[in-house]
Amino acid sequence: MVPLDETDRRLLDGFQRDLPLAPQPYAAMAAALGLTEAEVIARLASLQEAGAVSRVGAVVRPNTAGRSTLAAMAVPEARLEEVGGLIAALPEVNHCYEREHRLNLWFVVTAGDAAGVAAALARVEATTGLPVLDLPLEAEYRIDLGFPLRWT
Image (cartoon, rainbow, N blue to C red):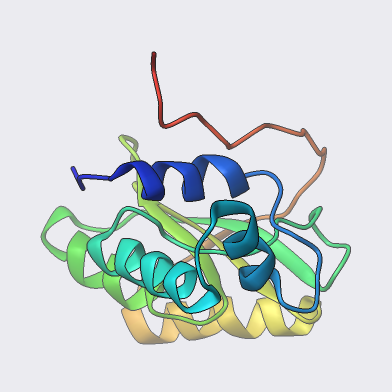
């Protein structure tokens, strides 16, 4: 658990859903919080380094700006950390997580086009020596991934 001060909470709560669409989004965030742009960038970098934030950026509807797919693998328990680290380090991977299932490692791959997604999945298979199950989007569901950091 990463301790958050009041400014961290205001930064994360205030911009989970409303990252400014501006030429300098961090400056806009800073103005709203009474901080400098450098302070906002430093706080976000520190929160990412501490593991409190996985990424900062817009969420785009699937397959509108490039292509993406959900993928799953059955990874031997002894290799789960190794394989998860390899996959999570790929620039095409948005997130990678363990599940309690025979297919115990899941991840999302994005690329400029379908060929880029296929190439990334092929690299995962070649690097790990394990098969990847490609689970392309069939039906879209909108879920809100934001949550308040304050429970009062």
